[in-house]
Length: 324
Image 1 (cartoon, rainbow, N blue to C red):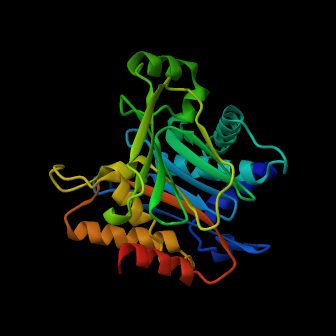
Image 2: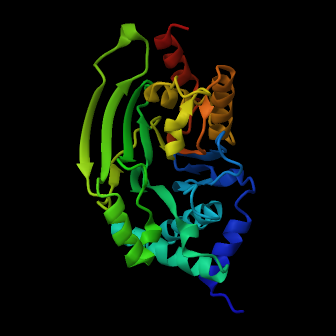
Image 3: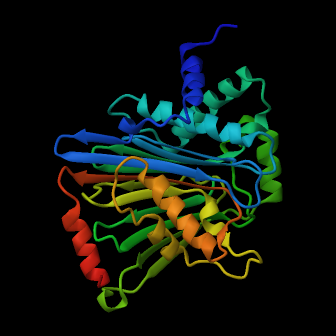
């Protein structure tokens, strides 16, 4: 069977997906260093991890496969690598719209799953992708999840949480079947909620302003694009699957406050190698010691732009503000 070059690239990329390619995550551009990394961890209620994540110097992506559809761990990988190829292979000046990117990813993923002989529902997975162009970052969301931007001070966060009232996200795969779209509309007409908050996670004595939150209600298929026009040096961007909201104890009576969990997960000590994986693994161990872990799979990908200088002054400022 003859495969097109695009299909061959997709298969090769998926085949190499678990290799540790350090230089794709740490890249020097002029006087700036670009750092990125990702991690996917299995939830306590799952036998296999149906999440997937990817990070390089220009793109970070997370995807969450539907637990009630078959082989969506494969579908999450397919969607992720199709999105990665489309975003990095685009014309330099072309920034795709939410709709164009979603359609392009869906078509490419359909080709890949057809060649593998897989059912349409394998692509039932959410997708959040962030594209960096110099110091501008464009974030596209298809389904649910969370986006967090940390200011250079390390304590102020803008957090955007996307959720569906029904608990059932609207997947890109529904674009492949009009009957599935109609059925979704009938079963889950409530739409989705987008909550935007600005929060402070520093010491109480240094609090400059109170936490704020705004919430808007959208149709289930309304586009979501968030643009950071200028990512300040030292600021951090992270994207999460909805497993972020499932950290709890065994009987579900205790849940960590989201802002503090985000702060812990984004509290990177340095940016060498697999810095997201190290941090998430440490936070997971600390939470498990307190009988708290995610019952759903959890993925996180993060990116930062830093001056090509020593990070000690930044660390010293944070330690001084924290009173350590």
